[in-house]
Length: 112
Image 1 (cartoon, rainbow, N blue to C red):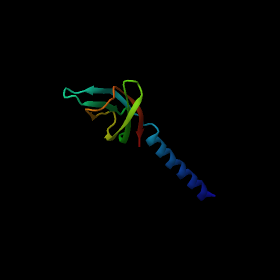
Image 2: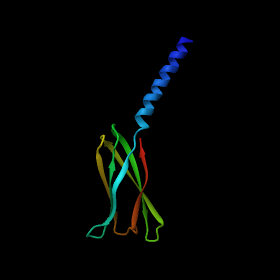
Image 3: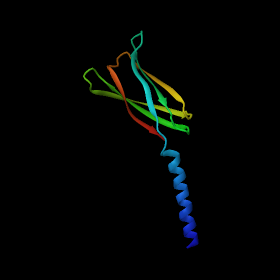
Image 4: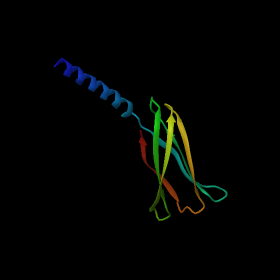
């Protein structure tokens, strides 16, 4: 019985340690922009903000692109690694000349 009690206590401590490491992690995207460069290419850019007291090892940001009729035409994914506590990390991707996107919004932000 004593062994079982110790095993349950150890399991509870491990689970609490794992939960505290991931449950509190959040992130946000600021300054999301869809711009046309002078040469005509479109660029999506933004800033991932880590408000946590711990680093974000890996984050995946989904950005939805919409056409002039407000219909979703594409989703982009940005993989960002190693964002220190309180830090901000910029991201950017060129869409090219033929992109029909006229607006963008933040979809999911996955932290793992």
